[in-house]
Image: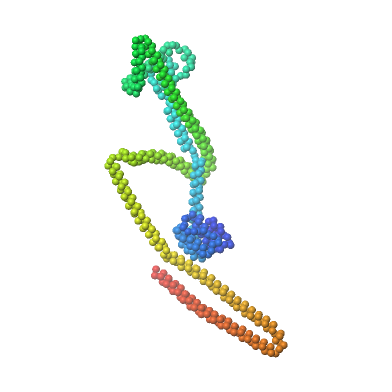
Length: 552
């Protein structure tokens, strides 16, 4: 199961699991932290792993990993001591579940990346057929508006048609009715016309003038009189002046009247010419603007056509490389492009609708602020509603403050409750304390062993130094003592004293050894009794479990 666990971590992408120089606990801890980070799950714990971490930091990281697994709703429970003890029977299903989470996260990320790439591609290289159709519709509407604006409009109408009217005169009359005229140059047909044609034309013009006079009859004349009263008064004054000047000479008055009528006709024609020139200039500028817009529209149309041809060629290439495997993806991409275009149109329509609604609401709001369009009882009702709203707002503010205080008290109580450890936390603390106790006991035992070894080696070194000093003193004084009998007796007494001291030291060491041996035997007896009691306890627990299973 251990090899399968390392194999799953390597297959998922954690290649440090196959490094032989790393400790198994470090590899397992690093693999779990890596899987949690690769799952892209938000957990409120620190999952950073470093090889230079101390044992306490690694144990804390193991507890954080267990908390993160609980927050991820892992179906397999895992505790920190199981990670520390490398309990592969509990670690294997957790690693298997985490590897599945990592693979599913990668697939989701790949799908999101693929969709983002498809969206970018559709934005840059989308099928512009719908865009071309919209441009074509826009251009057609613009051309229709231009044609409607500049289409021929009938300004005059003949009083009565004459069958004997020549064709070119009929053309000229029709053009005059629509505000146009033929060029002043003469063609072959015009050169052959007689003065009778000119007379007929003059008669027709007189008929038009008579028609205009009929048009000015009745109510229209009254309206014109009302509009041009000042001009009529001035003309009346001028007529009276002329009557006073030429009242006695009818011929002179008649001649002067013709001259004045001619002047008025010339002034009217001059005014009409200036108005026509002004209209012509305005229409010319509008025509130039529209012509420029038409050119820009045509240029845009050409660009759209080029883009359409380019996209069509790209589509042909895509269709050429289309296979049964990617046919579904291409169809889905086309559907997404069409959906994107429709959403853009809906967005534009929605924006226009929102603008209209905004203007309408602003207008209504302005009317409400100014108090227009509302009866008095409605205004009083609005004032009452406003007062009720203010009172309810104050009540809401007070209730919000009360709720804030209660919420603060709830949080304080919740923190106090959180300070009290739960049963699972107490079990975790107990296990942690047991682990720390075992670690401290092992360190204490090792320290005591080192102290005992140091003390024993120190005693051995001290005894050896004493032995060497005694042997050196004996060796140095033996040559001088051998020549004298009295010195031999003193020397033998000194050796006897040294022997007695060594025997005393040996007796003390032997007493310590006997005491330690006795203490060891007593502790061994206590251990045997404790093991016997443990054996009896385990046997009783086993019997109790068997009886419980029978009763179940």
